Image 1 (spheres, rainbow, N blue to C red):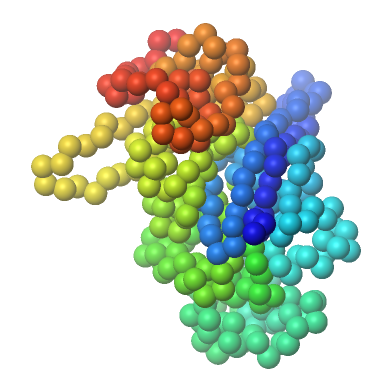
Image 2: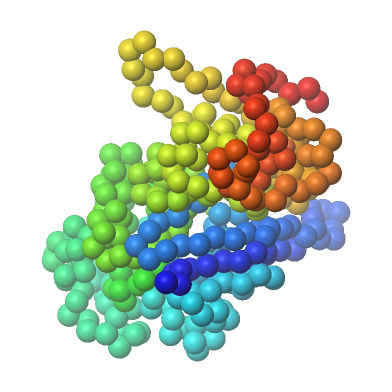
Length: 332
Ligand code: SF4
Ligand code: MG
């Protein structure tokens, strides 16, 4: 069966104006990214802010076209942004953003906002109430305005609207990071339930690795526009192979167990990544404790490593890297 969504080697650059000196600089936000999302499955996309996760999400939805490479949705090429064909296919692809208040219209009651996509696509508007109920809101929420709801209720309303057209594919970009911690778990559970009931494929973008682990069937780690590791959540988030993934994972606070040994937290050394000034070779090399000559010169390809087939983009993926070296400061 064809994948629901497939991106093959997509890249996307932007021109950014340089400060007061004028001129502009080209920034490659997404660089040769390939990913596959199956029906009813979630791919978690993790990495620091600015690494290209959101741009990847917009490319996956066809909101923007890649400069090169191809996105295929349900076996066919993604229509170009804003074409009539794309607008038709929009019903099948929806996005849920971080900020539910920004995503909703302050001047319209919730019910009218959930009805909007139904009207646009010529669907039955009496579905508004069942939709609200399916995300845990009540009938009377339909008449309320966004500011009359809590943050968690607003995100539920956004989800109800996203689900109105019965989409096959959802991109959730940091859907819980604006919510109180106590509400986050509820929205996460709701996302899991929605997927189980409706079989939607999801791209779940987050810097919250615990949330990603809870919902994802596959996880991809992104660094400066490239995917550096991809695999099952247990493998990537418990036994990460790429030096950058290891640093990312080590920053998650671990639950304290009596007598348990703690994996040392790896503090990344060196400058935070700047997409406008991309290091040569492996973009992670200025911060990597294991960088060698080849790392500075040659971009490592994302490929299965010889020892166990884990998909990693690292020249030293098959080397036995010493655990204690992770916490040593870099010699610069
Ligand atoms: Fe570090 Fe080299 Fe691997 Fe990049 S390719 S992560 S610099 S060891
Ligand atoms: Mg983002």
